[in-house]
Image (tube, rainbow, N blue to C red; front, side, top):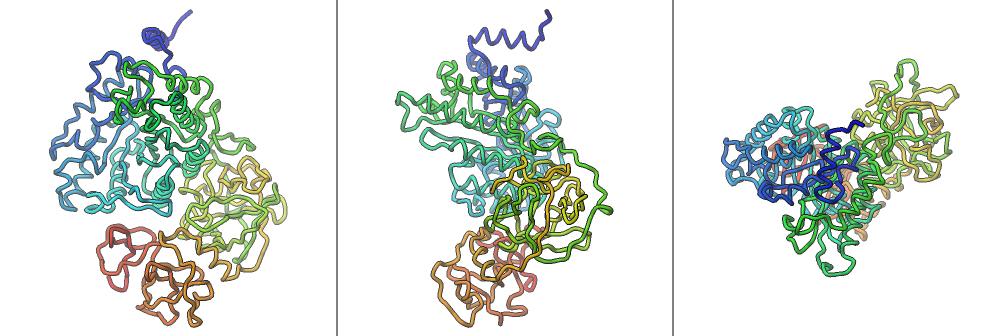
Length: 625
């Protein structure tokens, strides 16, 4: 009998350590740990490293470690980690190119233009040095403020943000230009489904995708404890949403502190549950492609040895938590590995299978039909349920329901249509604008880009249609996931196959009432400020009928189907119709205000030119600038 050499070496290592190795049961899934060269002279530490097939350097590849002195790049320690990974047969993950912490003082003291150039120069040199050696990098680390509560996001007021407000866009765009094949991640903590910041980071990533900033994945750090840990359904659902957004997920820095329970008899069992819940959620979602703990054993943990947060004990022998993780790997194949994995997503009722992104070639010129502009309800023929969204807000999920939502169909000049929801100024939208099977359908602020354009395609049945997305050139269509027929069944984009979960009828209907729209729009997350519950009434103001006072000024912060809105005394108010011309010349976008004073442009996108006032984005007022 012939034996694979790698298998023989792995078996010998396992015998020497007297325990089974995680990597031997990962089936190729990347399961790893953070390491530090200061421990490489400890044989027990290095033996424990051999349990993993993926490595990240704890500190050696960060900005200050590589370029402590401006212009002098020292890759020695980062290279030493990479070489050790190669020696042990491990893949290597880059962490982190840009981070406000562990940045050199010279960078912090630079002016805006110099800092911008230094960011570009650092990313360029590091990625060129590791081209073909490291396939994944955390480009930006921990840029969202901890106070972000799920209603939008707030940027951390770091020296980076103060001097280069668009440093995140700049960093990702530079990294993609320098190293097109490298996977680019954003990495942050408190993102695993416990705190409101988890939702804020999701919205932030969705916004990067929407603006075509080149991001491939998100790192969920997962520093938790037995007292504060995410429920399995929370982290599982969160990772699933990222999958639908079209990004990869890595759990990047997992440790589980025993704080307040360190001497309880069942503490290791509780810690094991946290580790295995995280691993099961990752393995079960096809976009989760990496799982790393932040350290090898308790003695080298940033938490301190007394918090017992890792898989190996003070002697670098595996704890019961390690065994629990091992047993999950023995019984579960990662969905990211495809055919034999867990929940690979996609549409189990179609012929193409979960991970096949091929599309049927569609001749739109022959198959497309045109319906009149107007309001419609859109009914799925397979379930008898309607295309539905429950409430207003960016990235709100679209499902089927017995409740018939109304959609405004508008023909565009390039032969496509847009579908605007009755809940407000939001259009049906392919999440992230991805041409992939299984991508979620959502609503997003109307901007009529390709992700929000669709084509109605005829079928062999009269007045029964499929609805193709422009991002797939009509080859992928609106599809009820897994042929669902119950209220709440998810709606995705999937390769055209003609099944009844992909066919729809358009039923003409009346326009929704203004009051109905206004009530729904009041639930929108377009601004972190809430509209008042008990506003004053004014018969002369159109907004009074919706429950909001008149504005005393004419400064427009937001516009929707009801009218133009301002903010006074931190509350919403309706702009009087007498505010015309230059008095109401600027309308904010996506919940952001118009700039009151500045004309300095920091970024430009489809909404216009953006400035910064009071540490927040604002839309440049064209009439003033």
